[in-house]
Length: 113
Image (cartoon, rainbow, N blue to C red):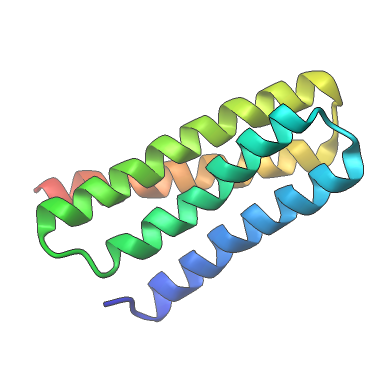
């Protein structure tokens, strides 16, 4: 079950997804890129949230690992976006995504011990 810290992380991940979607709507980026980054960015938090109600430790680690993979994909699409339309907002999204990547890896490492 999710605790207060997990709930805050879920909220932060959801906010990243929302911020990316709102930015994309205004930026006039290609629909294919917008669709991909929207899906991957929102999937980070969705998988992290699912992990909070995992049926086992193995299931928990698997969901966290999927969230990490989605964060890697999001980082890639943000790179594509920055090449199409460089922006400080995209740099901020990349920094936030990198923070989630580091946190998710730390969770994976500590869960495997």
